[in-house]
Length: 227
Image (spheres, rainbow, N blue to C red):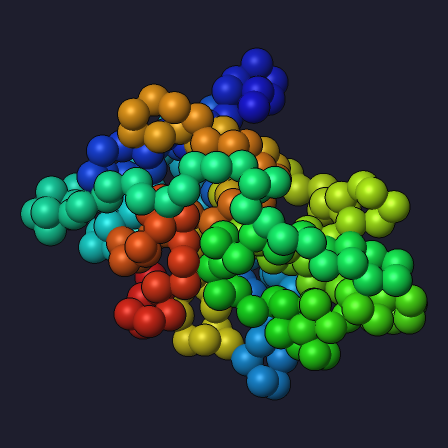
């Protein structure tokens, strides 16, 4: 993706950091929870200092998070990319409701839990002839940071309008720091030089423990990752 003549791209380096180019904005973002600890919305906080090009830690060991400080070298980090590189359309299953459809590519799940409240997004879609439930289903699907869930209306996907940026996420409901929330169709390039499917919403692992690198699989919760 290009903006103002600059290519916005994240390059995954071999067993090293994410190299972000094109002056992509970098912000702290918080998943604001309800009383049960499940997130309801995103809150953007301060923009972090960065230049036109910067390196973000993906081994989880940096003393200067979210930036890389070379700790992957001492840690012997294995950053091998193990996720399936197929397209979203090849991975998702479809749920049909009376007014909405929902596509669900479970493989992308980052355990963000926006889909949990009020019986869950799947339940809400099944009852989408009710206006309140329909609107909540759309909101939950659009807040899904990994893009696992997408709501559809009359055959068209309902996608949030997201500024190209990278969010360094916090999940206070789970008591952990979360993945990198990549938004707005930023290109992601593999260490071998190939491009992943460009999507509006992607979550990249930054704890170093995902079994689907470079994508987040929720392992930050299992290991209690803290930024």
